[in-house]
Amino acid sequence: MTQDATGLVKEGRRGPRAVGGRRGEAQKQRYLLLPQTLSVKELAERSGISPIDVIKQLMRNGIMASMNNVIDFDVALLVTSAFDIRARPEAAPEDRGRTSGDDGAEDPAQLEPRPPVVTILGHVDHGKTSLLDAIRATKVVDSEVGHITQRIGAYQIDHDGQKITFLDTPGHEAFTAIRARGARVTDIAVLVVAADDGVMPQTLEAINHAKAAEVPILAAINKIDRPDADAERVKRQLAEQNMLVEDWGGDVISVPVSATTGEGIPDLVESLLLVAELAELKADPHRAARGVIIEAKLDRNRGPLATVLVQSGTLNVGDHIVAGTARGRVRALADDNGKRLKTVEPAQPAEVMGFGSLPDAGDPFTVVANEREARALAEERQRVEDAQRSRPRVIGPEDVHTGIALSDAKELNLILKADVQGSVEAAKASLEKLDEDGAKVRVLHAGSGTITESDVLLASASNAMVVGFATNPEPSAERVADREGVQVKRYDIIYHMIEDIEVVLKGMLEPVQREIITGQAEIRAIFSASRTGKIAGCMVIEGRVTRGARVRVLREGEVIHEGGITSLRHFREDVTEMGAGTECGISMGNYADFEEGDVIQAYRRERTRNA
Ligand code: GDP
Image (cartoon, rainbow, N blue to C red; front, side, top):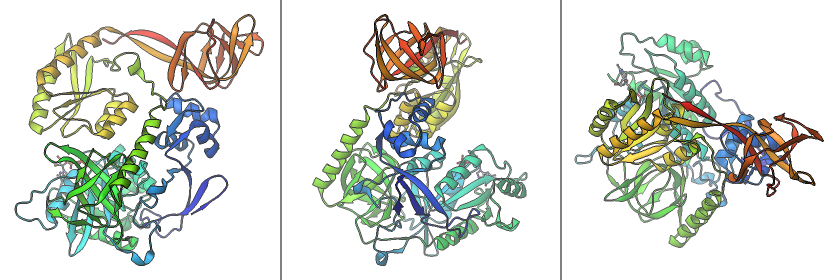
């Protein structure tokens, strides 16, 4: 890697060559390397985006920040991606080389071939889960009697002595969440397209996710057993997305399959091995293990259990392991059949018992020499995390009222998760029976298991709330819920749930106050004036500000004052309104405690009756 004065890093594309129309192309990518946390000012300086544009873009994402606020990498990414700047997190010193086993940080002489890691992406109901199950059913490694096949988020198959690892976490969020943390886990993406349904919105999303990750894409045209299957139409639709399949003269491998009948599954597996062979995947197994947390859950008897994917080195029972702020000593290792393991090699997934707390999915893990080092690393990260807490608060509609608006049809949208399928059905039936003067519950999605990031994102996209019955949100889902302002409620007793939802339904028939942010201005300088007291010299950065408007003053995302604009001036003129991109002087009566960098937010309240 070479770094030039702008901080942009030139880097040859690593890892496998792309199949999706880019095979063999020695492509150079430029990335902006950014630390895990940085101030808004620093982001502007490093990216070359004007500070106003950075602040505006953050606001569009619901984040009120001023120049000195510290934001984290994920937030910075919201800004850079809007300006088509590709950014990656700088590796922290202790994490260097963590992202993949083949990133050149290792001694080339020590490298040995490793199996490919495959992720299955595609539109909902196109058969991702069925395909994962079908592949696994035909090729379970060493399924011994007494070992129950379980879903731990990843599994490995053996095809004539050649192994392939599948990430068993369907959903683009899991894939992207891991990538967002800078880890490169997947070597090959399988794009599932149902032959009867064709390319759908999430297919396109999947293509974009895979292309962004720069991994080869292999198309699995599924459900070919169905009478209305039309594989040729899928190929044509893929061609429209610049994914020309091989029998159309392109270089995207496509395999017709049926997860139901098993037809084509062996072809799919062989094609994967072929793509993997081209990629020449290697890792050094002779060092302390590094990898990524794929999933984590709390087990009543065994404590925190994490599914990890080892990316380089070998993980052993007894190792001291650190992932984010979670640490522990590996007490036991098991594969996806529940079989105990002593060691785990590169590209091999395993369930780790021994973490003291739940690590986050997507976090990289490292093995360190001893407990002292593990503690020091985890504590250092905790300090960084605590410092980040002071970052800007996200202001969303939930700050003003309950956050849930009843749609015109008087329906409360719910995403329902429960521990087991039986309780899903029971909870769903009783929720759907509720009727408060015509206000009803609409269950958009119901399923068993923990509340995931994807549930929360779905709720956010559909103005819904998430209800968990006898189940808990994953840590990552909690974070997303905070960020997106999604309400997540959990219950262990069904009538508590029913009572609560009844209250919400009733509440929704009441008029609610809705707040609309009409404009924002940042304070750039403070002036004193004999007549009006202190004047804030501002730049309007969003919307418009008007004389007489209700405003609040935000510092570091916290509200420090509420009041009204008593005088608005442009140069020496009194004006009634100023739009974005203009400078103005704002006075707020006798209030004088504002500082440079504060944000003046103008808003109005509307009473709406949702019913
Ligand atoms: P996912 O949402 O992509 O994980 O899709 P699922 O694996 O849950 O499958 C959605 C539905 O399609 C289920 O009802 C499956 O039984 C069905 N399905 C999946 N693969 C096939 C297939 O190859 N043939 C047929 N006929 N149905 C399939």
